[in-house]
Structures are given as C-alpha cells and as structure tokens.
Image 1 (cartoon, helix red, strand yellow):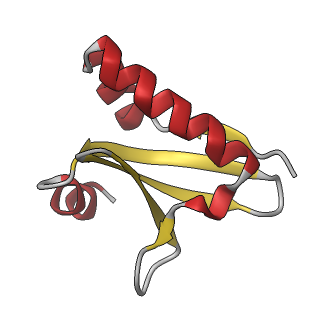
Image 2: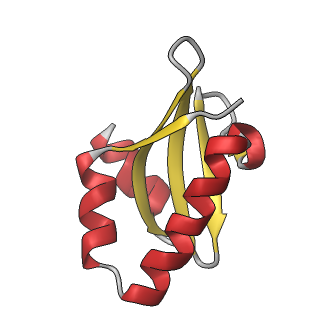
Length: 88
C-alpha cells in the first residue's frame, strides 16, 4: 500500500532551511514512509508517530481513510518534542 506523504508548512520550512545533505537524508526517509507508514515509532499516549533521521526527528500522523501521511514537524532531537507540544 503506497501512502501519499504531505508536509505541514512548519516541516516544509525546516527542510528549506536545512543544508543539502540533511535535506536529502530526510527526504529519503520520508519516501520510505510512503511504503511503510509504521516504520517509525508510535509516540506513547498519542496518535502521532516519530521517525528518526540521525539526530533529527520527524513527527507525523497517519491518515488511514485517505492513505496519507502528514509530516507535522521536523527538528533536532533535543528540542523537537518541546517545540511540537507548544505548536500542536
């Protein structure tokens, strides 16, 4: 099953500011998510998932009805969960 991967504007902003190497590594992992949406880890007590890309994390949700994955936020592991909880 192939899911469509969509970027929230906050996640897209991060990718636009990231250096080329990091941007390529993140995009490669996001393409894998389209084929295997549960390849990340479920965040405890929530409907969200996290995907590890080196020292960075992508927070996402899986839409089963329309087969989409929405990447909500991307950030460094030391701050991603605090930033995400403030924004969402």
